[in-house]
Length: 259
Image (cartoon, rainbow, N blue to C red; front, side):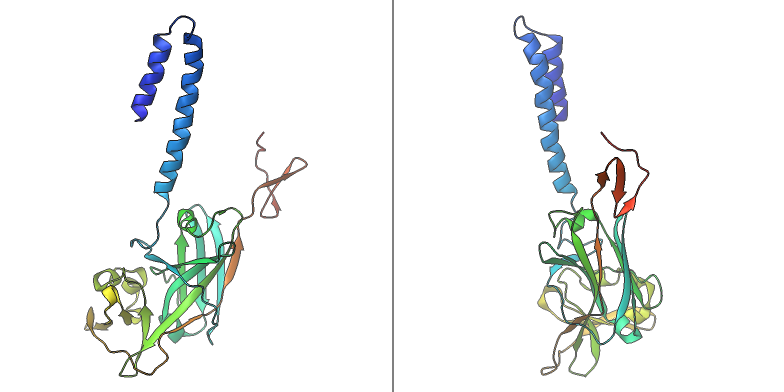
């Protein structure tokens, strides 16, 4: 389509007509510019990272978690070229093993996404980098939005009274679960209960491998148990010019001012 637009413009220039050629030469570039703008918008829409589609982050729309766990965490968040980087140190090893996802909540829309393919960069630490395009699924203003990020503890109790990390994401089956970053990195984080296609499976480590088997949920236990170990907030403030001086995130910058 781009080649056709350029070719049409070239015909208008190379073969002008008396009386109307000048107007055609002026009008044609304006038409091309308008089409390019529209196409750019379409390309941006396709470039956005959609939710509920799987790899690499295995994100889902989730409910905001307001229940506080007994165990707490400390966290950080910052915007980088790759997106929103967040890390959280969990205060208890057993709680750390049952962190199922990281929730990102947008204040203006009250919408949240859960990122299930999280990293474990250090002991008792979880983290992830969320592309800005993914954040745009829950906000209409990424530059001024206030985001709240929470590590989410999620567990269920089985009929044998064992507590398992609960991965409530229908897109994550056994084969996919084995490829998640924290599963590959630590056998201690493998045990979990998966629910692909509405069926429950117990995932466990045995003899150096990862295995799957049937499991029954405890009929009277308060399942599932879902809570947040803590939260951090971040807001990417817009660039502001005050009397010829630039401020970004409240700090003066040395960037060249744009006219």
